[in-house]
Structure formats: structure tokens, C-alpha cells
Image (cartoon, rainbow, N blue to C red):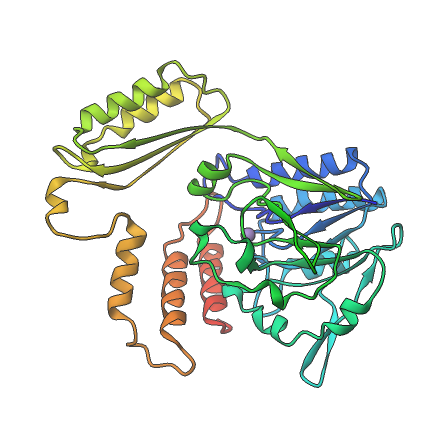
Length: 405
Ligand SMILES: [Mn+2]
């Protein structure tokens, strides 16, 4: 038996026109590799799309790939993730499943308030597959708490569990604030646990369970992810062997600079110097600055010249993170915050508890506010009409507030 395990494809992620088709291209490459590898079936552990209603052009490409797999008799098994799930229950995934392009294996019934999952059996290999979807804010936890595990654990044969949640035992330190759940909530005795949601590349054989694996995204989804992962990939599993197959779209050129005791001019020169003899073809350049300037303000750093220089050297895309640079004047205001997110968090925390709503804990309120801020800061996309843009923002707000707008 040979299968592929993908997760967090996030089709439609990245708003910038230069990167907005990248996740789709990564998906095309991944499916191409799966076909070449002659896998028996493909698993997608959530977040196939970045939203429950992806852009039509991306959707069309993805559908073409699924159709190709179907014609080749390579079945695809999925669970929805926190991004492509929608509380209203409406998502494009249902349409694609209805068209026979893949099977959502989160299937079962409720018996006496308990969740009873059914297995989907892969015809070719006899593998028995089931799983649980991911929801926004990791609300899927209640499914795990109400899950009937006995019949799942007793079932014989090769068993696969698809899930889209963080697991305490496999969570790296820097993801401490991501909500996760203990491993003990998963049913025991499966051969393979195909994870998604946490964008890390990891797999572990765990006593009493089986192999628990996170392939990470097909393409990194943020500046920080690009820094950390540089590229995405997925797993190919054959019998007891597991191999991570990278997907190379762009090269990544990183430069991090501590600006302590440097002037804006010195910072500019040191960036230019760093990249002077570097080959930047097809490269995404990431510049991260932090520290306290010797003089001047962060806005005095001539990024225009830096960017022009890098694009002249054929860089594909240049990004900077300079939120963490402060000037001496700013330092004297005595804020501990080092970036925009910290400042926002600080201000939000200071004002929590003023919204009086039932069941709204302070934690939920903070998350709600952050989600709303994120949505309301959205910009109209290229080619998007004003009514479409308004509708999109409204829908997203409705989703966060869990109301129909
Ligand atoms: Mn994800």
C-alpha cells in the first residue's frame, strides 16, 4: 500500500498578486508527484482551501486536478479544516464531494449524545479511513470529547485517522499559544494518524497509537512560515516507510539584522552588502529587522532603494518585517511591545470585559476582537468589484460572529 498525505494546501492564500497563485501551483506540483509515484490514494488533512468559498480561477484549477485523479482511479479522502469549514455549513467542499471528486471521511451519527464515526473503506487497498474535521478556534474539541472510541479501536485491518487539530505532545514551543488537545482524546490503535492544522513537519511513532504525522503546508502561508520552513511538502507513505517530499516553488533569501546602535543609513548599507553577491533569481527575499536605532526613526530606512536594488537583481518578491525596530525616542515611552501584534494585544487586553454577552469568556472575546480586526482590515483584491468585496467582508464577519448577515 502506498499513499500520499497532504495538509494545509490553503489554495488562495497570499493576497499579493505575485504570490496569490503560489499555493495553487504547489498543489498542481504535489498532485503531479502523487501521480508519478503511483500512489493508491491521497489524504488531505484539512485546509484544502484558504476560505470556504475560494476564487473561481483557483477552484477551476483544483477541480481539473481532482478530475484527473478520478480518471486515473486515485481516490482522495479529506476532512475539512478550520479554514475551509464554515459554521453555516455551506462550503465548496460539499459541492466537490457531491460531484464525486473526493470523499469527506468525517461521517457518522449521533447516538445518545455520543458521536459514532463510520469508516470509509478504500476499495483498492482495503484501508479503513475515518476522521474529524477542524473548526475555527479549535471548536472541534467537543467532537473528540463525545467520541465513541471502542468500535474504532476494535476494528481490524489497516486504519487511518484524519484530523485537523494540534496535539499537545507534538507541539513545538513557539506554538504555545495555538490551542491544542491531549493525544489521549484520539482513538487508539490506528496505523496512521494523518494530521493537519499545525504547520510543522513532524512525524512520530507513538506507543499505543501509531504513526502521528504532520506534513506542514504545501507552501508556507506567512512571512514567518517562509522564514522557518522555506518551502512546503507532503508525505509519501509506503508500508512502514515514510518520506517527506518537498515542493520547491521559489528559493528563499533571508536576512535578519539586529539594528542596535545602527543608523538608518548603516542598516540600508548592511542589507545591500549582504545581498550584493547573492544570486536572487526566482527568490523570495525576506528581511527581518529588530532592535533600537542609534538615531533617527524606522521610517528613515530607505526601503525604496533596498527594494529597487533587490528587484534589479531579479528577486521574485521582496518582503520586510520591521515592526520590531524602534527608535530611542519610542523606547523612552517604555512600552514592552515589540511589534504591531503585541501592541494590539496589549490594548485589547486592557479593554476586555466590556462586551456583555452570554457565554463570552475573556479568552473568546479577545479572539473575537482579533478576528474582526483581521477581517475589517482586508483590502479589496485586484479584479474584485466593490459589491463582491463588501459581500466577502460581510460573509467573513458573519462567520466570525456565527450569524447570518
Ligand atoms: Mn492550516
